[in-house]
Length: 92
Image (cartoon, rainbow, N blue to C red):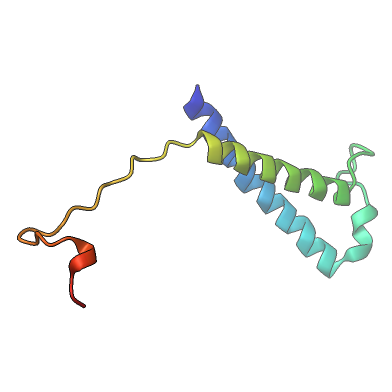
């Protein structure tokens, strides 16, 4: 179950961010269109509202992905063979 949540969270993060970048590009190129409807089929959401929802979905998706991903265990750093002197006593 954790793996499924992780995959969906990553998808929300990536596609939400992509949608937000699209709306940001539209805002730069055609700023007067931000108050237009997103689709002709519905009166809501507007383009600017869609951008806000996309950014929020991206942010929440990233946070959930970050907390549900599996982190590999830390690898211990071993001394090279034949080196028995402690690191603090080495000469530079």
